[in-house]
Image (cartoon, rainbow, N blue to C red):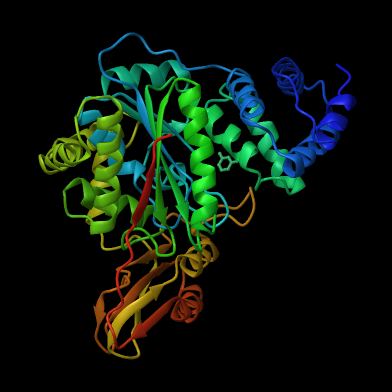
Length: 436
Ligand code: URA
């Protein structure tokens, strides 16, 4: 294929045909198009964009660049959720077993941390023995038997995205809506889902800083997901404040288990219940969102999802005794120190970006692809906006590998909190739902 005219067409703002896009992805995946030409096309797309038909063709061509999961017939709908990522965002962990208990099948193919935002697979890697890399046949068998799986993409799923994402990362073309949409949806469509709920975050620690930007991305993904035959909805959620009261891989697993016991923080519970409720409505298992919320909450409180979590862990190789011993510890980190408030008042701000950067620098995230992760690093007992603190009351605790790192984290975390005399109005977490 002579690829140059395609780059020139897009550079001039012209439309690419579906056939040419399919051929492009086929040949790029097969290594027949050099990276420098693909990078040039990505930059042309970054500036000129893709229309809906082009984005759909790109998404489907990327999906079809590898294996699409094929599940045997079953009355339980296939569902999943995707989050654009944030600090303390552990929703997937309690949500997968909850959905399985609500009568869904959940092939939750997840990713690793990106920038300061945590990744579900990194959180799961903090569980002794838990395997996140499973072949397709095992994913399919576990979904049938347990009802849910949480694992990484296999080598054979959506290889085009792996190659294109690496080029986008190296060519400054990540923040392009059609490229983000095709990247996220190609992977979700390869799960062969009946319904998908997207959590698109906005705020200082989100991929999309503004609500308007998040809405634009959400609308594009919802339109395309539905066009491709998967019932797709999005919720826009605030990511100026971390979700829950803990952030950092192991600390988030611990908080997820509390949530499965119905005892998690209110914001986390709200997002877990709402995500499940939307999927119940999308698949016609509940008539209204209010009824679906009641059903999801009752299921969570029944204890069944907590038992399903243990089943999921065992199915993916975890050592349940070692997990429970770890869970019983206050912290597996070498050092735990408290950040105390200099004055009494109400928490005005608990800055998710600063907290995310601190956790990454404690070793809880990656500075580059090769970085080793310290799974025990993180913060917990976060004081959240609207909450009251007394003088010397705890604003958060830092879990670190050593005292020097913990002290430097504490110094930076002081700038993450603002305490005021007046109780601030608490902002809603879920601000909007988009269904078309
Ligand atoms: N996550 C993805 O998988 N792809 C993107 O392009 C952005 C976020």
